[in-house]
Image (cartoon, rainbow, N blue to C red; front, side, top):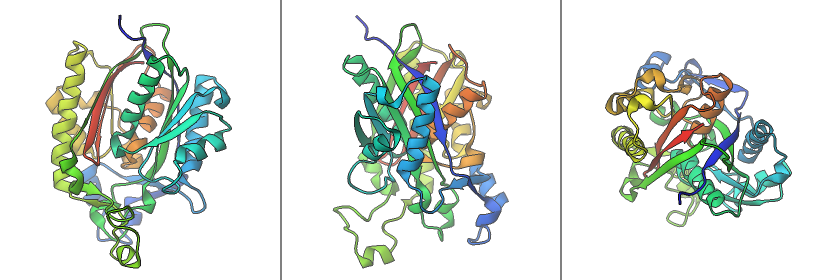
Length: 327
């Protein structure tokens, strides 16, 4: 007997009002709108205002998702927050989000960087399939503006802030998560990481002066692995469900780099026109990327009930994954 499906009952997003354009960046680092756009497809990104935190944005997105799902936050059984930029190392930002949303449920964080929302969605699917949970909120949220080196043009041009969320519930029809597929390879740790601030390099004056608490990335290696692994994960998801590329209505992929997505589209044989794209407005928001895109595509009517979606992402770890969802 197959397990009951879990469907997405509602989505929400929260993005800061402050916009940082490529032209703005060109005033502080050696770059240009033409240089950034040609290599990434990014035109602008959002930056969280001083005084606001990861949990503020996550709670806002979570409340929006609950409103769309037409449920009270107090009805939630669990909140899962995917992030690598929490309010503080301890406790989990999810418990602060719970408090700010007025919920009373279990709450915990996961860390899978850009693949975080897919990992969280998979966990929520398992919790609901087990029968003990009926309404689970999965939030992807990042305030990357506070962990990037704003003097490094190779990384600071890529990232932005934002939060996206989805409420998952048991399905009563054919809609829902058809399958999820998760992967990781720890050999990729040197390619994308924040080396300082943990037990390997506890925070000291020396580590801060050396900017070890900020994002370090080997751009070419990440690009190559992203194209290869996202493509293969997408193919695995299709094969697992007996689907052809033409069967997919919309691809909601992690918005890291437009050139990556174009290469994936070619390898998987799904036209780039089927990919929902908002990278030009937000840049790379890591774990928030997929849920923000999911919410926007739904509200714009790009995604309609019954559509077959392919979700896929790769991030630090390296961690990556894919999912097929009947929306």
